[in-house]
Image (cartoon, rainbow, N blue to C red; front, side, top):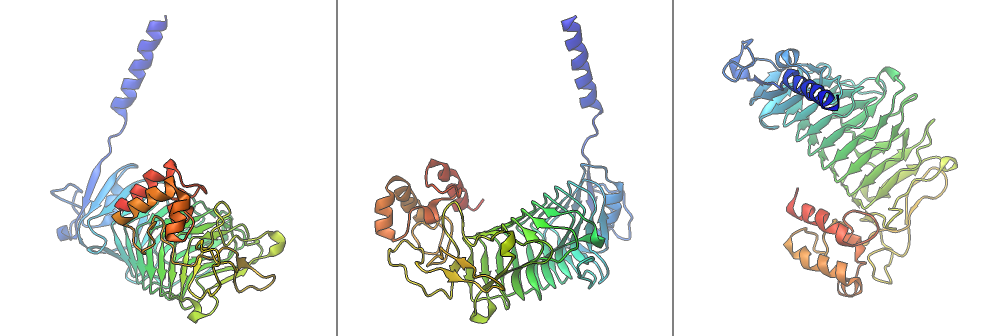
Length: 407
């Protein structure tokens, strides 16, 4: 009886494996216009939308170099893969969203996206790429330029935006509430992007009625020469770290409050350089009655680098002895642990570069932190605690090597 049951189970597994739909790859090439084409490599579709409409969930669409004048809607879990973000361009002709995602689990990679419509407001936004009530999507290695928002996020969570360039948009990333639907923008990751020359904020968490922008991760981005760096309202418990925030006309980071408290945000290990016309570089106007924002790592007791900081470092540990004062609307707000020098995670020899010359100092910092601190004048964990757990130990070796190799 037991053997018979196993045989039946195996047969079911084999049947499922045999009948499971195979992933299909479709091809799009504007050289095959006017098309329409059949989607094969020999006879590709002329339009991206034809490929999307034909594809099933889990399929891939490979898009050749060319300029595609379309307003694309993705309503199923597929992958759109361009040949090059500089040469595979979707042009929205100045109307609406250029590429709207209305499905979970969509991947968009190596596309250039431009010329959306002009609308950008609390309840509506024309995005180069618009994540509209979509979760678990990935936008990677894309170029967003000349849009109302490079990427807009509406009532969408658990998405990853990484390794993209956003320039000459009204805003780089614009998170909002679509038609005032009450669903949060939460736990999105915004990592390793370059945002420059955007008219408004590089990253804007916009005012909403009921939606909260919370528990998002903003790490390792280069935000320079924008109208402002990061502008946040209705925003709680976001982690903002390891960003280069340089030369923005307004504040490097601005946190304001409305019906949401704007508290519990953690801002640490960022470089603030020459923002706000050389004046105070950040504003924290949250509501202290709801709780504080933390302008430092609670685990490591390390704050941010401020180019206008003039306090002393009497003990030579790389941390200023006098807090940096932020602009505020109510009670005083401080970064109590301002970094004396520009921060680069892994730069253990303190030469503002991450390269092979950091290996020896990294090993020294791990094995003999007192000797390291004597030689380099900063605490051993400051640049060497790669996994940010407050300690420099063997658990930091793998992430250090990963950063060193540029992966």
